Image 1 (cartoon, rainbow over the protein chains, first blue to last red):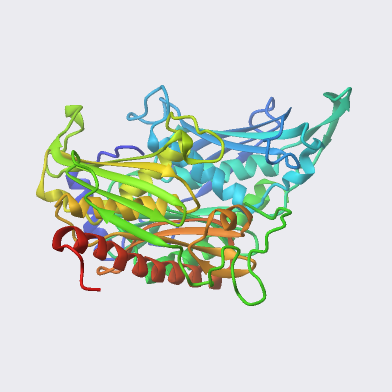
Image 2: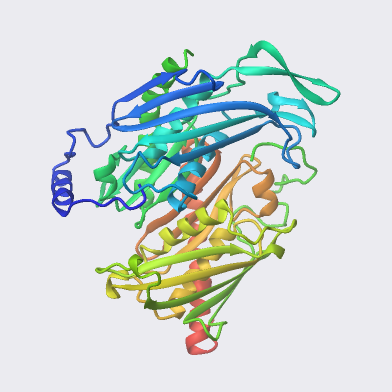
Length: 269
Length: 244
C-alpha cells in the first residue's frame, strides 16, 4: 500500500472504464468485494479470524491478559489494536520498523473500534487503578490487494466478537488465572469501517490495489450498529467537496449495514 | 474520549462554554509571517494556548536522492512537539501520533501546492509545537500554509484549518483542550477556501448523520474565519500594516 506502482497502461484502462461508470474487476462503483470470514483459526489466541476481502487477506489474533491500567484511566481495561504488513504479503513491504502508512493503518483501525465503544472497557477492571484486563488485537496482513483499512477492521471485529475472556482473581493483589473459566467479551456495538476512493469526480467503494494506485484521495468512515458515525480519516493528495463528504457518509452507512450482517453471522451473534 | 466525571461545566444554560466563548466563536488567533531568517518561508501562530512555529525550505535538492520524482516535486512534512509543550514531559523522539499527524498535514497541503512546477526537488515543511492546546494539528496546518506562501511556493489556494466537535450534545466550533478531553466528538477539518475542497478531515467520537453534516459545515465556516487571519498575516508581511 505504501508506493503502489501501477502500469501506465493499466491506469489508463481503469480511468477510461470509470468514465463509463465501470470498474476494472467488473464491480459496480458502490459495490465492495466478496468478504469471507473464518473465526477461531488460531486456537492459542483467545479470539482470532482470517478475513479475505477480495484478494486481500488478514490473519488476526486477540490475546487477553492482565495488565496495569493507564495512569489516567484506572477504571478501564486496556484495548490496543496494531497492524503489520508482513514481508510475504507485498513486494514493497520490508521488515523493520513500520513506515508512516502502516502506522496510519494501525491507528485508523484502532480508532474506529475504540471510538465506537465496541468493548465496554469498564467491565474489564480487576481492581481500580491497580489491575485490569487488556485486549491486544494484532492484525497481520498476509496478502495485500488494496483497502487494508477495512480488511483489518473486519478481522479485528470478527476476532473480538468470537473471543473468550479468561477469568482472573486477585490473590494478594496479584491476578491469578482461574483455569477453565471464561466469559463473553463485553460487546456493545459492531463498528464497520468503509473505505471509499475518489478518482476524478467518481466515488468508488472498497478500491482494490490497482484502483488504489490511481486514487486522488480516499476516506475511511466507521459507523456503529445505530447507523451513527464514530470515526473518519481522509487520506491522499486531493480534497473532497462538502457534497462528496455527505455522499460518502451515506454510502458508508448503507454499505456497512450489509457488512455488519456478515460480521454478525461470523461472530455467531 | 467518552464520558468522564468532571467538575467543569462544558456548556452552561446561556450557551457559554468553559472558556467563555459562544458555540460558534473560535479562540484568539494571531498569525505572523516571515519570523525566521534562515527558512525560505516561515510563520508563527498563536491559536488559543497553542504556540507553533512553521518553517519551509525549498524547492531544493532531494536527499536521499532516490526519493526524487522526475515529473513533479515532493512535499515532506514533520510535525514535532517540544518536550516542554505539554503538561507531562513528552519524549522528544517522534511518536506514532506525530508520524500520523505529519502524514495527514502533508496530504492536506499537497492539493494546494503546485508540485508539478518543480520536478526533482523537495519542499520541506517543519512544524514545531512550542506549546500545545487542543487542536494543535489545525493550528499547525494554518501556520504551515502561511509559511509556504511566505516562501513564494506556487499554490492553487490557501489551506485553512479549524476543528468542530460535539460538546454537551451541541455542535461547537474550535474545540479546546478541556472540550477535547471531556467532550463527545472532535473533527479537525482543513479547507481550500476558494476551491471549496476539504483536504483534511478526521473524526473521533460518535455523531448521527445529521450531526456529521452540521459538524462539517461548522468546521468549514471556522476555516473561512481562519483564512482572513492568514491573509492578514501575509499582507502585513509584504505590504506593511494592512488597511483593516
